[in-house]
Length: 156
Image (cartoon, rainbow, N blue to C red):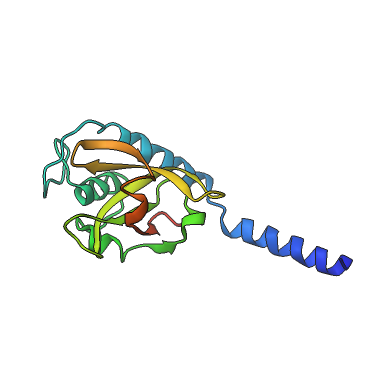
């Protein structure tokens, strides 16, 4: 391979990595946001509940983000239009992930917050208010076939 081709490929890879960096301040905020989200593990699911004693899925994500100065809609469908689109192989902690639900058909009906992501495999874990209460789930089984997309709210 030509030396110039290799040099250009390296520059492109470095530029792509720089695009995906996040400020130290935002990294800390996301860490704090996830710590806050984990405080509610085990809280019950109640349709339409906005917290902090009980949550539905979008009430949970909206409540947690609001604690850090971000106002997002209390509707999962509306949240899917907020922030910036993120590909599954580019997820990072704090991103919102969206799914269809049994009742929503092909529309967004569920949302959670990414707590860890493996961008090589596309796997991730997320915290959400499920019918069993607030919990952390793996991206597998039920959720695997219902994934719709992801949005990034904290972009700095």
